[in-house]
Length: 562
Image (cartoon, rainbow, N blue to C red; front, side, top):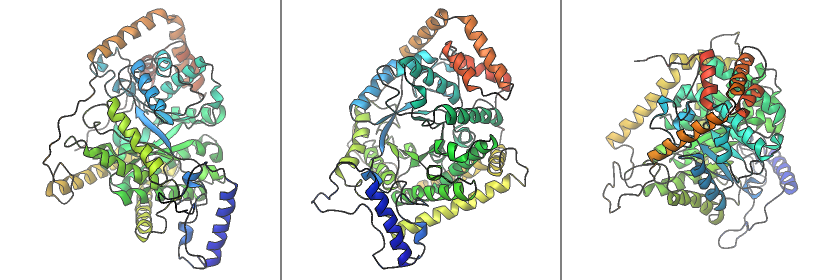
């Protein structure tokens, strides 16, 4: 790009920056030196390929979505939390919000993630252990008691039974008196990554995609600010993928959901802004920053050039980041505070829109109040003390970071081409990327490549080529054992007791009729969300709704592979 084009771009950025709202804050260094809101090539110089870097708030958004960077708005501190029953988790949420958290993120227990009630025989011993137990809309009411759902953004990390859980969230907000059309938050709903990495599914892919399509339609029409899909790379990375695989598989899944929306006749400029992303931030500092920058650039280009989006917001890749759980160690767990801080800083320098920082004890148990506070304070120290919010994309133009960004982007593009090849030549029911994803799931293509990457890394650890402090180097320590959070068996007994009371107090005939009506709607082309909402309002439980759909659609079994 020649000097005149660069100067014109800077002028465009300056005009947008001047017109944008900025926070009332001190944007100088610790020593009081003023810093510019963004930096670029020296005036009057050319920079080959600068169109791929650009300016913040301008296509291809490599340097961020907004011209102001974090001067306009800092990232949302969104701590992931959930344990025991709804009352216990509600107390933790109030602690997080009271300590300065900006949004909530719900972790559900394993029975809830699998669409089963707490009194299901398969739930025995799992209730409340890896997240909060939610059996019905009544639990969702308790979960958010005293928390204005119309005034706080809430993320819910659940995919298999995401749609009925979302309906419970809507009914809880309804019972608070909220205007549902104004709700803002995110539902994960990403079923592709379940087949690829996390394994928490209910049905075959097609029924799941039916529900997701209905959800996208409903939110686009009724709750325009709500994001019904958070396409997740986090679990792909935690399963052992490389950074480039995480990026490529995740964005490919996102393209699949774009194709799903288009196949429903939806306007990409309307529904695409409702797609968000969820990435892992691992411990290789510069690789992660490059990954986030490449993600924005790839998404914007594909949405514009492949899927025909024309509105700016449809081209924006918004993403939440969580620091890498798989990087935490049980050995010398206090070292995890350092790892988490480095990973959080990478996410911030990569331009994340919201962030969860893991607690130091999460490799051993759910976080204690103290470790959860340390994790929260880690973000606040970065935000308030380090100056990283002062300049947009401060590493932009670094030879190393730009080369890594280009390299990861190129690897991702190669993977996209391979996935589309898996789908074969058309016609495709939903779209070519979707066909490739479904074929890759069926053939074990994704899981095979992730397993190979995990194996290569494990070999490097065992040979000592890769180091983990406290694990394969610097193993001596004076640290004492941590006190960890333990979930009492009484939680499960109490949850089962409360569930039995609620079932005995409701109108069973109304529940049965509402669930039957939901199944009947599922046999038509009608949107299932209103009928599911009616079942939830009647206090149908999550297990009852999911069991009715399992009876109708069957249960997915992953093929055995050797």
